[in-house]
Length: 179
Image 1 (cartoon, rainbow, N blue to C red):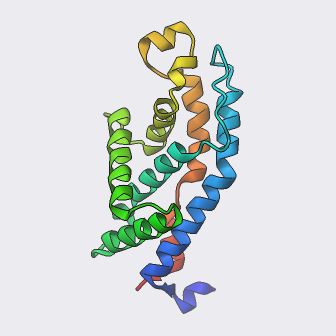
Image 2: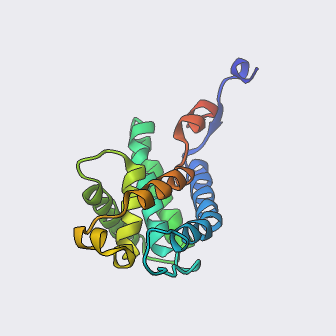
């Protein structure tokens, strides 16, 4: 029925607001679950004790990953404008200098690409980045610790959860036209 009326028109600034609010809410609600998954993982010889309030690194992983998808879904310079608006809004939310935030997000994006190489699967990159940024290798058994590689069972469990932290651009683009 809605196809009769077409897509709802929405401004880039509103897109950035929706994106920022949605991602932050998802992280705030979801990180305690992720911390629980990590702390309850039988693959660890000792509990990492990831604090539910220690979501900074996770937040940056989720933001960097989601920003990396924008060019695949927005075109005609909208990707750059929306990304810049998102970073501007995030810098206000986190009360941090915009240039500093951009630099940190770029560092996290590089880190995600590095731990993910040669794969292009960003969900897998997120899981591996969590293991690296939270130094979870230190809590693994000697075999995986010596290999400096996450236990595949832990990665699988994290992968299943990471899908919940990705912005669904396909659905968004079906409903809205950015003007």
